[in-house]
Image (cartoon, rainbow, N blue to C red; front, side, top):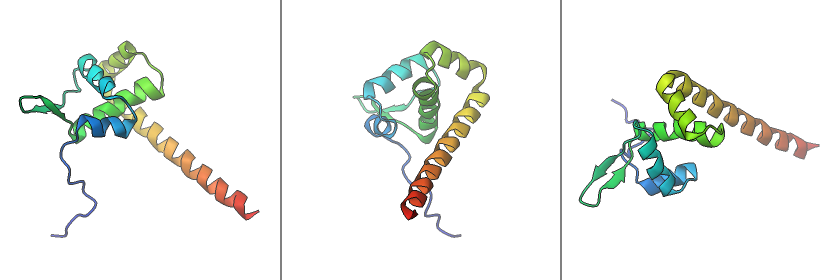
Length: 116
């Protein structure tokens, strides 16, 4: 059996790491935990240190897409997630891909402009 070097070996992320991934405040993540019942990171120890799994990070990504990128209010984002979770997930994935394609095209345009 071959070793998969691309596999992410980290199982849990701290709230600070997740906040940095999305350029958010830790307090924003804590607030989202109170508003979105699907976002419940594991807590460890007497200090209740949050540990976010990949599943939790996907949930944060979906909420971030709805609230920060698409501009929905918290109540509207909750409604979308509760009523059409699969559609919201797919829309977030498509948007992320389109942003990536746009960034690649802009980089390519800069390279082509430099050749002229």
